[in-house]
Amino acid sequence: MEKNLPEKVRPKTWAEVKGQDTVVKILKQQAIQKKSLANSYLFSGPSGVGKTTLARLFFMALNCESPKDGNPCMECSRCKETQYNLIEINGSDKRGIDDMREVAKESCYAGWSGGYKGILLDEAHQITKPAWNCLLRPIEDTNDSIIWLICTTEPAKIPKTIKTRCQNYKLSPLRYTDIFNRLKEVAETEKVEINEEQLWVLARNANNNMREALHLMEKYSITKDINGILFAETNLNFLEALKNSNISDLWSIFNSWETEYESMEHFLNAIKYDISSCLKIKLKVSVGQMQPYKKKKYEDIAQYLTEAKLIKTLEIILELQEKIGGVFDYSSLFLKSLIQLKEI
Image (cartoon, rainbow, N blue to C red; front, side):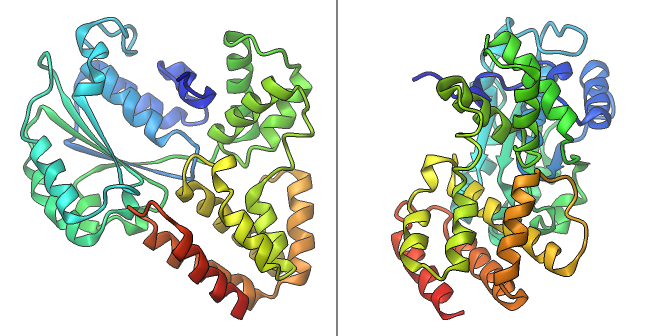
């Protein structure tokens, strides 16, 4: 199966990473000099700003036998064997103590072809506290050939005992210019026929999220309809249905998240962002950079939803998010959440 566009064009050089210049400069120099290396690294920041990308790129650059200006060569045995040398664990799927015991065992084995072995914990905020306790000793006492890479959108949920043992990198929200520049590069390399004005439209409507921007470009490359790809946003439809107290629509929306989102986690994060934006509008505080049409929708929805209803909805979404890890059939959890939403 062919990779989707965000995965296909994931940066393989430092220059391709946009909007994180300070972090890139430090990590690139560490990879080149092999100095000031830590056993563990924590990457935090909003969804779609490059946390996992930077973690992977840093590991590959560090492990490469023949780096070129700090970039992985993609040709040596270690680059080709990254899938064996870098163990990736998604905290939304594996988050319990038994899962982390298996991860701890992995940290005892060396990588292929010498060099480093990496353990990447993605969506790490979903890992349970007992599971983190299981990893504390392996992270603290790991040998110098093991690199731990921890990525999260919610660093407050990472135990302090773990955070203090990591080099911490807080990634910045992406600017429209950062997204536009990357989209322009991708359009050229992937031969997507799109003009600069349309690229700016995609950049401004991507929620400051590079992955969303690339998904929009992928849809545009198929439909050639710039307007048709901007308004089919399931998360915004959720707020519309909530505004109208339409339980039937809410049920339909909950069960259609896969049409636009790569995981339930990303879908619920989008809803949390929407609720937060509506609350900011009601409280008359800055919402930051935001595409005009979306701000208008938030303003419209905020007129009809009280602060109390928005806060209660946020609590229900947070509760749902805590329970979805490792669940394959979401129906029962959705039903419970719908009953709670109906009652507010």
